[in-house]
Length: 336
Image (cartoon, rainbow, N blue to C red; front, side, top):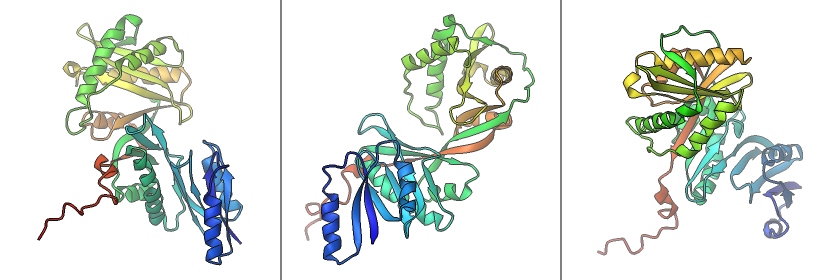
């Protein structure tokens, strides 16, 4: 007997087994459809267990409609899951680096089928921006995602904590009295990102960022560094422990005012972060930058940050929510 199942929770009221098993019986198939209760957050482990238990396949329901698996002859050959952010209708679907994988055989086809299954579910709940993280050494996966309409948006880079020569610009830890100026600098950075070729909407939650600045002032393992030029704050750089890479201090917000660019401000800030990270016992420094940023991309690469991860993004035309297979052109066809 071949077994397939439904992953989700709760499943007590599901009619799927009754319908699916009736269909198997009608077709005289020696198959069985079973319920597999799986709580949210455990779907990836459950998918791996299906292959060990000999399941021929499975589909998913609430709360796992954002996860799919590929099985071939009962063996797991790939999976893809997404985490949704924000409210329905304005969601970004994020597929982390540990939320997708496929075996080497027929990898291209597996990724295409996985994304075909998952993307429809994402669009159905209003998620029209899809982002997926991929290690830079997975050239074939990056290529397969390019073919599915994705493009590189963000780059994660790492470097050793080798000292950086001072540029002569004064840097110091920020104080509470600097918060107002740092928020103005953050707003300037946001409008800069609205310029071509980045073209990101100049929208920023300054209250939330201000709270983050305040926290950085009192937490020992976080740094908020400012640079001064001509007696005024000209740049800032935040740093703290990386959530994904061990022994790594990662730079968060980094900005230099337009009047002080190309004057060594960014290099001085980075030198200060590297010195602080070494004193804190970190072994590496990391940063994530926007790939089409014509200033930050050469800056970080030029300071020995080696790319280790890409975030690829695909934007879906939201009109597909209604201009889809259900749209009838019956009344739009010109009459003869």
